[in-house]
Structure formats: C-alpha cells, structure tokens
Image 1 (tube, rainbow, N blue to C red):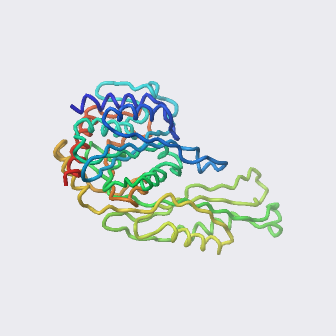
Image 2 (cartoon, rainbow, N blue to C red):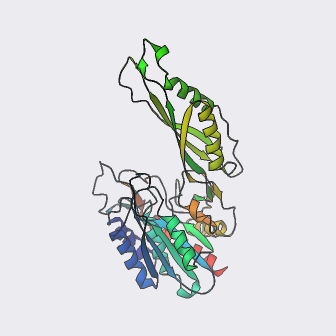
Image 3 (spheres, one colour):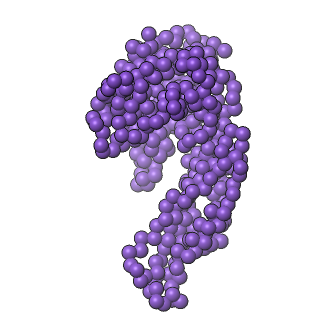
Length: 379
C-alpha cells in the first residue's frame, strides 16, 4: 500500500536540511529510497561557481532510471528549499505531526511530492516501462546548474523521456483542483541613468539623472503588451525597485537606477522584450542589462493532461483546471525536450512559516501519481 510509504519518505527528506543549493544528505536519503526499487542512480555536481552571486554555487543533481520495455515516463522535481526564516513553532528540519498535518520546510515545496512519487513506485511493476526521476538541488536559486545540466546529462546518455510530470505544488484550495499546462516567461531588467552631481542651488551646473529615469519609466509604464490569449493572462511589466542612495538633501545625485520584472505570455519573447525596452532606455540616455529567466511555454491539452485529469477525478472526485498562472518553474527547461505538465500538492503554505501538508494528501497524491504513470506507460 502506497500510504505506508509516502509519509515515511516525506519525513526522511524533510529531516535533511537542504537550503538551496542542496547537496549531500538529502540526496543520500533519496538514493537510499530508490536503490531497493531497482533504480540506477547517477549523481553529479554541475558548475564550478564564480564571483558572480547570480550564478550561485556548484549544484548537486540526481538522475535515477529503471529501464523497461516501451515508453519512458519521467518525474521531475527539486530537493532544495528556501531558507526557513525565523518564527517557526518547531525546528523546520525536524518533521512534526500535529493532528492531520505534517510540518517542516519542504513539506509542500516539494519534498512531499517527491515522497509521494517514490511511494507510488512500489506499486508500478518494473516491466510497465521505463521510469526516471530528474531531481536537482537548485530550483529555488539561480537554476543555472540544475535541471539544464540534467537535460544535458540525459541527452548525452540517450535517455530523453517521452513525457514528463513536474511535481510542483499546483493545487490551490484542495488537492487536484489545478494543474499547470504552461507558464509565462520571465525577464528581469536593470536600468541605470548617469548624471552629474551638483548642488541643488546651482542646477545649471549639474545633470539630474532622476528626472531622466522618471521619464524613461513613464514611457515604459505606457507600454501595453497584449490582451492575453486563450490560455495565458496578459503580459505585464512591473517596476520592482528604485535606487538613488542619496542621503543629502542639497545634492543632485550622480546616478539613478531602477529594476523591472516582466512576466510574459507566448505572444512575446524575452529577447524581443529586452530589445524593445533597451531601445527606449537608450533613447532616454540610460543603459540596460537584462537576464531572461525563461520563455513562455504551453503544453496544449493532450495525453498527459488527460491522464492527470482522469487520475485526479478517480482518486479525489474533482477535475483539475488546466492553468498557466503563477510564477515559473523548471518545467520551462524540460518543455524543450518533451511534453511536460505540472501537478502536485496544495500551495497555500509553500515558502511560509510552519509549512505543512495534509497527510491524507500525501497518500492520495501517491495513488494519483501511480495512476498517471501507469496510464502513460501503457498507452
């Protein structure tokens, strides 16, 4: 029975402190779960790290595979978690059961989902097909050396899956009410405008960069990107930071800076957005740097989403809504090699103090995952 394993595995994983980038003990724990189930486990470190904090530290990754006849179904996820913060009622890395809930950092995002999938494997015969797990220690961080490195690893060994399920917490009000069939793209931009410092009483001897930056931001704010699509909400541009750092009341500063975040649908591309904003910024005498975190993607409703919907309805009695809302995930990388859909636990407590998952949801999710895998492998 899967329910005897899901809680146990979740507790084992939560007990391993694995603040991003994760390595070591939490991967040891997962490997120990998979080896008795007939999986070949391959672990490797990607990236050497450098002085750029945006690149992060070297990352541990795990690819596990149990080969069988026919199709290849993959489950993807991450063992790293965000820092727990202060104010927990108990040690965030000591799993605690209070009533019907299991508490601990990663219970929802997403050690609980990984535990449920491993539990499901107990009831998936080895001859059902090929099953793999694509697990990184760097999803909550820069995501430079994580899933992208795992994709390169799979391509090099010739084991690219036919389809992939990402176990991110997609449910909202109750387990099974939502799955993600796509995500918007994301790009961050940094604007810098140089001026000439001077005394506010002699403005003709200075050049105020704040005035220029405000004008640039007003033009950016006036941009209307699109009205959205059948599957995506409208793209939006948001100013996320303004910085001058001027502590003097009588000095015109020498520089003003701003940061933008754009979440965009599949009517846009990251590169085109960067080009458009850069042209506007440079015409306003500023400079722009940008980092594209991922492009928008969509897996149109089809075999995988149908298998998820059937399994969810059978186990919990509701039909999941296909959605593209929310932030981004590592599915943005996996979609380049195969169809991918995200489905997992309720996300109400992810990244929060006293993160918790309903134990009954772990049991139900294990059965849902089992049914999805069997449906895809038998097709």
